[in-house]
Length: 244
Image (cartoon, rainbow, N blue to C red):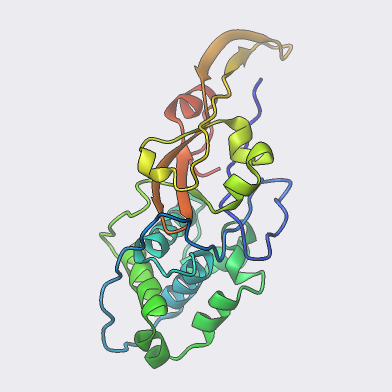
């Protein structure tokens, strides 16, 4: 029976090791790949008081995002974190970030950008284009009717998917770009066909439950980050959770 391998989120500045249980690595911060153009973030507004959830989410999005401060990239990271928070049953995003280091490396690994926003005053955040964009992305993700910049993603990756391509946990189980624009690192797609079976009382495979060619497919890409979700064929064949 095929094993179920959750995907990584990316790579931190200090490139922390992949967690042996979840195969996850953080992305913060990354340099924008050559040839990509950062989208303009909305203009900053007057400083307003930040609640704890908004500040915590914005700080992680700012820390995990590339140093180009691409609004859509940070907004999409915030979307993924809120989606993971809700899927895993945490009451607040702050509780999720505090408890789950796997999906918020920037909050736990000494990330300088994360620390900068966490410590900044509301006035300093409003006056800084990058931090203000991160706050806007966080507010969007936490709103009642958010725009989903991540397009349904539960995972993300940074530059390590190229630098560690041969051994990257997602590549090893198969990746597919649903749009050529998502392939910001110009890496090859990879099929890794597999199949799952029903098991009998003696734990021997019987009837096939389904086949898949790859586990991960792209949903979006901004700045230095590619966003992913599981392939539907894999989910149907294994009954794996979308967020695991």
